[in-house]
Length: 235
Image (cartoon, rainbow, N blue to C red; front, side):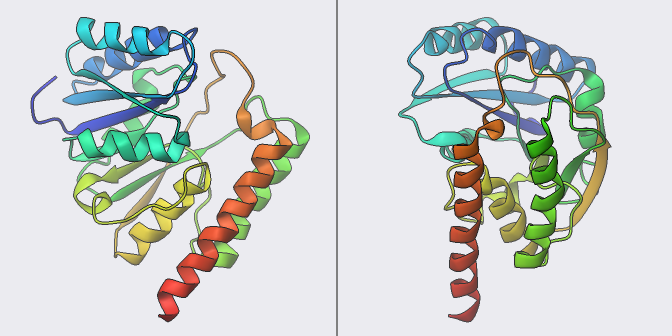
């Protein structure tokens, strides 16, 4: 992995002691297989288990892996912290509970230099219960109505050109941060391309998005950003 990487992968980790080592090693191997110059930035987001110790060990063992530690700030706060340390041409947020193979990353890396934002579109929603499937159908439509952003999938893996991403300010800490990034980059004039990707089965645990309180927090966060965005546009 070179000192001037094409890609910076930011990996937020909150109480991920059971999954972090395997996920990072798989991700590291996948990037090496694709011959993509990359760095992996683990952000330990205030974990209370052995995540900090494991992250530090991975940074010592694997070239191009960096470990950061902070108080709990949510996925948005962890991503912001990771991007401040990133040096790659593109940024990707990668979940600590998702395995990585070369085929998972190739759709994004093949588009490097072709667009400012590369949006991964899931062909199937694996492990989703009926309520989550309804939300997955409704959420992009709500985003299109509120922001005029018409994308097939707004809550999965995205790659952002770092030189543009550093010009936006994110206010959301949780899941709505993903939509906020897309909207603010669109408003900045970024170019977009959508790529079809396969959703992977989680390595373990239960998706937080399946919890009603997380669904509610996501919805209220989206409307909070919408009000802020409207105010900015009319000021």
